[in-house]
Length: 278
Image (cartoon, rainbow, N blue to C red):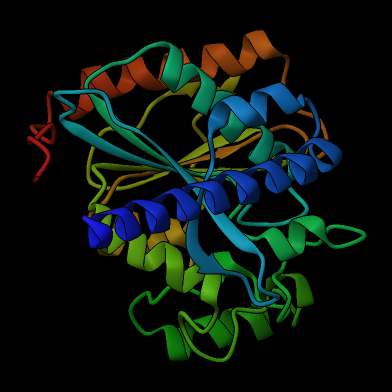
């Protein structure tokens, strides 16, 4: 009995610590992100993943998993720290996922790059100066990623791919999440180009809300290249029109509805709605 009480006490302590962490996260997100009220963040019930950024900040996640879920969808915001609107939209979508249960297991990572997000000013790269969206292990990364950075970007420090693929704790965490979660779909939210991009083996969505499909190309080390092209995990890349302002709430909802409609039409038709493994 005493051992059981100890286990219960430890569990309650861990739960309390998680709630405290989430409360601090909401303090930070409310102060930093556009169109995010504290209540919205608190309702998201963010969980500390135990992963840490370069500077030791927690990377938060949130699972919304209704009973009987058959699709797994991974939603990522804030891969680039200066794209504040992407994290805001991810938090709004957590609320929408909670309000409308469906047969989809959603896993949200609203701020993959907290060091970039909370720096003053915010910046695209992580605390090591690495563009996380060029740090994934695409084929021939060692040759192609440095060449692209040096020749095509003229050594733009905002797009440095790092010394090796998955050199950063943030990209390594996302890579491990992809392996653990095995998503049927990845949605990566960015800004500010105002288009919809797609990589993968299935029919892409033609539009989400006011964003229309405009496939911008394949880049060495990008998530779209690694997940969609190399691993066959469809990647929808959303480029919001502004990095500092979100779309209106009605547009955020419309994008969500269009995404769900496309998923229902395409993923189910493609046979990718396999039952979740226990």
